[in-house]
Image (cartoon, rainbow over all chains, first blue to last red):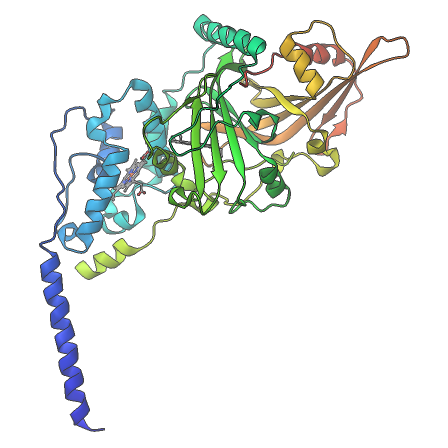
Length: 320
Length: 155
């Protein structure tokens, strides 16, 4: 071996290392701002609950982001800043009390479910910030806190009246829509859902509703052939929700119709929302949920995210 | 140190195993029932919190139309199927219950005899294998229960 060739190689390497070093130093100055706006409507809960949430979630989901020195080194800092920005957008515990009580409740169930399914706190973050992990004992505390919020009691007359009013209208007019309502992403209400077959049913005791998940022919065929992860293009789910109407003996029937939601599979057309087109229409008037907010589907995706290894679908199909 | 942290941060995020891609086998109807082929539609659903069961009532078009119209008399050509499951917790959503073991299938069919009188046939199948139940003691009560169900509002 001749030493002549080695020296230029070594010089080149040194040069590259030096260049990387300079880059490393330079990118330290390119810093997106993480601000700390005043906390005006902070999350309130018993101390043991609040402590878990503060420790595990507040770095990304509050105005009280507490960065350690190693979070502030680039290129890590970019990702941290991104997490904080996106995290605060979907859920900010510092603005908690600005939400309506019903929305607070729903968000809390969503938060605990994200933990239960291992989707939150983000795993790459807990690998570094091990103190933010939520062990099973803490999860049990959170679940117990939610469980006492569940009210299972006979329906009052307002619920029965709401149903009666809806029912009479529906029975007579069969609520025909001359012009189909449309969500901002272009998905229109599909009246035919009620003629589809059933994928499954659920009782939601977190929010006092009951649901049927319908599937179109493509969905039913996929279940029959067990090709459901991923679901084939053309699959459509329609999930219908009603109030629960409970009598004193614990028998529950469907009350007022609340909404119908769709998920339409097309991995090209809906690539930006995980291959699914989302839409929600509320009340028998079928009011589009997201009028004016083209990005509403992010909210759907974010709550369905713990099912990312199951094509973002919660429902485990029942063969009929 | 920073390098290590960067590598950790770059790791992908994945959710827990949640039995991805599985069918709810214990709740599924046996193929032999050929239920989908009947083409029945959902009439309504109900829950019995004391027994921890949930049921879906299906009907053919005629049965559903009559039920929505609130017709008092039973007409020929109606068919209902009431399917009942034991509930189980939904492993994928704390806050939900889903069908567990298949418990029973009850079927009603109405037909006119030669004199034009409408007769109601009731069958009761039970358990995972849907074994026929011969005991007819509760038939009248169950038939009344099924005909009394009010359809769910589905605009």
